[in-house]
Image 1 (cartoon, rainbow, N blue to C red):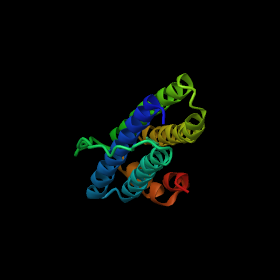
Image 2 (cartoon, helix red, strand yellow):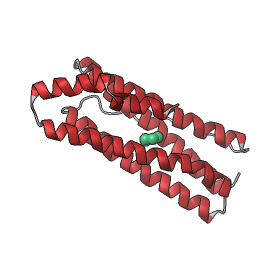
Image 3 (cartoon, protein in one colour):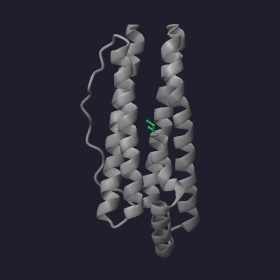
Length: 171
Ligand code: OFO
């Protein structure tokens, strides 16, 4: 495997792993604050990111490279409120999209068209995830700080297709 591509793929393994931890921290925070819909959404999202990481690990190893299992920084323990959680989620997804785009660039520079093809799955995935985060954030901004609205939002997230979108992406 091309060493530049291998190294960029391993960097991406680290990013997917830390995304999974980050969303796990959000899930745990939401669960301990009685926000069960948000907790369910974030636990699913965390699993999804772990799946993204595993997909990369298998690809690297199957192509003769060596996947590196990274250490992960501790994510935040506290979040201000739900809006803050989804703002952070969107900002995080935007940074992951940048890193996927960088990976695409490296594949093209190194003329590794097989990996380029593989990475296209992540390009589409990032599009969906950013759109989903923006949709949720728009809803939260409409609600403002209204407590009743937050309660309904959380309950809707538990039951609606938005909550299931993270899970569907894994299938
Ligand atoms: Fe791995 O898709 Fe988001 O970060």
